[in-house]
Each structure stands twice: as structure tokens, then as C-alpha cells.
Amino acid sequence: MTDIKQISNKVPDAITSAVRTLYEAYPYPRYPLLATPRWQDGYLTHSNFASTLVSDLYGTSGTALLTSGVKKSATVLIGGGGEILPYVIRKWEPARHKVISVDLSASSLRRARWRCLWDPRRTKFARADLDQYLRIQTPHTFSHIDVYGVLHHMPNPSETLQLISSRLIHGGTIRVMVYNGEARTWIHHLQRMFALLGIDRLSADDIRVAKELLALAAAASPSLAARLNQLGVETLNNNARFADTFLHPRETRLSVSAWLDAISKADLHIVGLLDRYAELDDLPNPMWQAPSATDLADRARDGRFENNLELYLTHSVSAKTGALTRAPQSDPLWWFPYLLKAPPRLWFSYNETRNLSMTLRVKLWHAHLNWVLRRSQSNMSDLLAWLPTPALQRLVRIGAILPGQVADLGRRAALATPIVANMQPPERLTASYPQCPMLHAKIDEILTAKGKNVDKYSMRVIKRLYKSQF
Image (cartoon, rainbow, N blue to C red; front, side):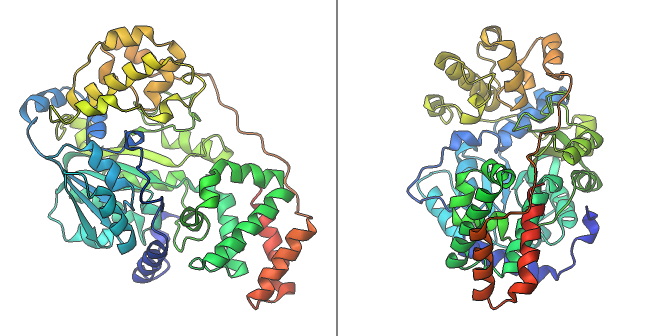
């Protein structure tokens, strides 16, 4: 994998322009405007969750700040939030928290504004390049910064991380998601295949043709079909998500180690990692104790860890000293209607949790809201006694239960330990050169329509399809 300092081999303005053009054409993720996003599924997105996690893990100063800072406001920056994230985060942030959403795409911002139109808690929107926006801000400006799925599309992610770090107030928090480069090698081959074919990312007809080609390739290759199934039908059917995945003009192809190194060089400390797909069960609870760079890199290389890096960060000095910005804050009447909502779907998508009763699900949701928004344990000891141990182990790993909710230090220590002794690398289906005549004919048809030399490009396209199976 390329070192993070060597990735910017294009003019930054050209990269920014290309990325802006993509998202003007395809605001991400382009859900129907009349659809109401299920904001409670965004329980991991907001500043109160991040600050609760940090204050629970790093000492007593969080308790002192709870009493001294309940009425203080916070400024939350959403970098590259698209059309959905501003709505979700605004739902979670108290009214006195200032929320600013920065995005390159005017189309995304229009849709985001519309979604937030009826929320009395106002959100400020700014159309700007994230790097440029951060450069003009006063140092130590933001209490919480959310950059989910953004850094790997920036001209120089290392520089962006440095800017984010410099604009974060002392003890502030960051949520970041970046691609796991090793796990996306197969996607990189498909990206190169579409480039060889001359597929135009801005053409709906070309995207339709690209989808038809992938369908034929999946029918000829069970291994590729399994890969595509992991992405889900939404990615394959939604043009915006398809273009974002396979036709993006800028994706830095960095290893897990390179990302972690860049985070460290920006003087940032990893507080926790979301193990969304239960791939790290042989390690201590990664939400409470971030895995080492070696552990993650080893698992990324052999396929045991294929998730993106979903991380919570703070300044290194804040983690060492326990100097936290603030403890969770809430308006008394603001959080009550949230108790009437259904809990996040992720919580009950695992083998250990999917059979929990509705009563336990509701109690768990209410306990989470009370702790994250009000710092109230609210009968948590009873809930911990009712939850089966396997379910409890899973719930703490996905942030449904935070360390401060477990008063017994011995039990908290037990919940921080690995669940299993080891995790095996996934089995892969056998790869083979696709032999489907319809697939070959489709490739030749696309090359001919694009005015490309069939003899020159056809086999190169097939080789990319072959490599995408690994």
C-alpha cells in the first residue's frame, strides 16, 4: 500500500473539482426526499455519544465537568455529510449545540436543507471544500467533528487530519470512517475494469450498462457474486451508491497501518473502534480498548478484518491527562419523546441479540438514552442482571451499553475481554476466468460502443474480472 504522504499525485484542485462534479450529479446517498431517515439508527454519530465514551474511559475529570458544564453549548462540524447525516445528527444534538454541515455539493446541501427544514433546531450549511473551510477557522473551534467516509476522497488525507486536529478544542472528539484498503482490493480491480471500458460516471446509461455487466459477471463467478452480495442490493441498485463505490474519481488506496500512522502523526488518539461485523471477537472489546496497529493490520491482510475503520478519536494529550471537554448535555424536555421511538436495528442483528424480548429491547434503549443524554443509570443494575451474557458481550462492543453504565468494576473488566480464543480467516471460493459467452459479448459490445480496440482491451477487462474474485 502507498504511504499516505505519497498519494497526492494529481493537482488538488482537479481532485476537488472531480469529486464535486460526482456529488452534484449524484447527491449521496440520494434516498427519496419524502422518506424519513430512521435517525435512531444514527446513535453512534453525535457528540454526546463520543463524549460519553471518552469520559467513561478516561478518568474522573468528566464527572467534574458534568456538574460545571451542563448548560454550555458545543459546536459540531459535519464534514462531507451529504444529504442524510445533517438530519440525523441534528436530531441527536441538543438545541443549544451549534451544528455546521460543510459539503462540496450544492445538490447534496439542497436536499439536506430540505430534510432539516421542519426541525426547530437550526443547522448551518456551507458549500465549501473541507480543507479550505478548516483553514479559515480559528484554531480550537469545534467540540466534535464528524468525517464519515470523507478522508479517503480528499486530495491529501494526512493534511486534512492535521487540520481537523488543529481545529478541535482541547478534549474534543472526532468520529471518522475511512476505507480499509486491503479489504477493497477486489473493488479496485472493478474500478480499473470500468475505466478500461470507458464507463462515464456521469452517464445514467453507462451506469445501467455497468450494472448489466456486473450481473453477467456475477452469474459466471460464484466468488464475485458472493463479494457483490456483501455490498447489498442498495449499493447495486442505487445509482448514487453504485457510482460512489465503483466509479469514484478519487479513492486513496491505503492500508490500515497507513491510516493509523497518519492519525498518530496528527497527534490524535484512538479511543475506540466499532466492530460492526463481529470480526474482532478474539481481541479485547475494541469499543473500550482500541486494537493495536499490528492486530488490525494482520487481520486486514488475511481477511479476518474487512470492515472499514470506524473510529472515535481525541487529542493524544486529552487521553493521557483525562482533560475532557464536557460531559453529555441534554434539555429536560428534549429527550423524552425519544423514549417512544424504536431502538436501533443494528443492536438486534446479531445471533446473540436477535432473540431478546421486546421488553428487554425497550429497557435497553431507554437505559442508553438516559445515560448518553442525561448521565442517569436508571435501573441499569436490573437490566444487566436480565441480559444473557452473550448478548451483553455483543452490546458493549457496538456501543449500546457504555462502560460508565456498568458500575461493578470487576464486571466491566470482564466485558472488556475477548469473546473467543481466535478467529479464522474467511474461506474463499475458487476463482476462475469467466467463460460466459454472454459476458464476453457484452464486454466487446461496450468496447465497440466506446470506440475502443476490442482486441487490445477485451482480455485486459477479463483479467480485472478474474482478479476481483480474490
